[in-house]
Image 1 (cartoon, helix red, strand yellow):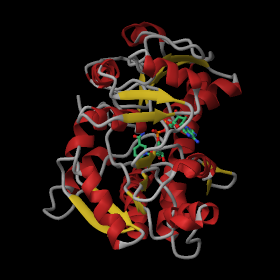
Image 2 (cartoon, rainbow, N blue to C red):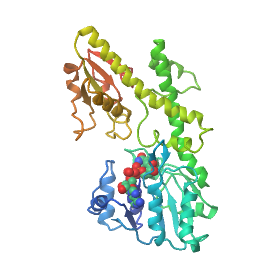
Image 3 (tube, rainbow, N blue to C red):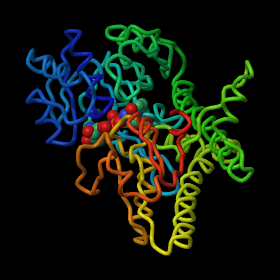
Image 4 (tube, helix red, strand yellow):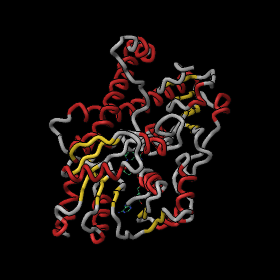
Length: 394
Ligand SMILES: NC(=O)c1ccc[n+]([C@@H]2O[C@H](COP(=O)([O-])OP(=O)(O)OC[C@H]3O[C@@H](n4cnc5c(N)ncnc54)[C@H](O)[C@@H]3O)[C@@H](O)[C@H]2O)c1
């Protein structure tokens, strides 16, 4: 259920083991694309795999589910309102398959979810089909793949599998063994749910420490990159690199699933989110104050190049990107002459992009927002604002 960045590679990998897979998505155009042997997302090696399993008849997409032995849910779990998890997709996917469930089935939730979601889905299932109580297995098994390397990681990463009871865990482990070579670690559903959230929160807290240091060092007039390099010479210290903020649809989102439920206790996790979001605002203010100083010194407005729009280096993904927020905010204010540079995008419907090679001739201020590899070799004579350590890496 759900043929996106997680569901489609998972469906294709399972099908490649000779298992008949029916991929369900509510989006008809996604279904049509897959049935024609093509894909609708950017992910290396996925196109060949999907083409192969579709041609062999092992993967078929549809908008309506059929009967099956195993049901996997990989639909989105965004947040709504004040960072509250929105479970409407998980719930609707669960409700869609309730009529198809039968004795002996396995139901696995893969979507990143707040603690207790698997149990909630079980309650919905048994409210509608009480006769299935004790007759089906229900488990949670989170995904921890790296976009860009999904096919390899799906097969080789360790997985954490938590059933609502022991038998469910065993059944889910048995199923994942068909296509996962990594270890399958057994636990209960709540621990597995929390494990996924904690993995991303841990990254967020570590990055927040580096981002906070970068703002302290700016005030103290200390080079943060040199400072972190030196501090990391301690055998038991490993500080991460600061940046423009934290983006993407996982690290910037999942910690809120803990905060929303454990408001009193999750102080550090909440503060990390606040710091990482604030770092983006801080970057915007830095660019604006540098522009103002330029105008005072030169009696004209500067042209500002924003280097990178993606949420992390060397990808084209703009989801929840702090660099994009910087660009959007400055564009919205309309007071600046901006050049937007994103070497990983050929073209954009929404943004006019500039080739990074032409920046030196056109820009007065160059703000490095994302450490794309192309920028590392780029030399410029103008004012440089380095928020991602690109100059340090030259
Ligand atoms: N993308 C990642 O790198 C990644 C990594 C780890 C975990 N996750 C988690 O995996 C889950 C899925 O993420 P994604 O990136 O694959 O999302 P996505 O947006 O790429 O794909 C989700 C798909 O589900 C479909 N859908 C929505 N409601 C549906 C329903 N009721 N029935 C069937 N299909 C439905 C949508 O049309 C869409 O095609 C999320 O919880 C996400 O947090 C994602």
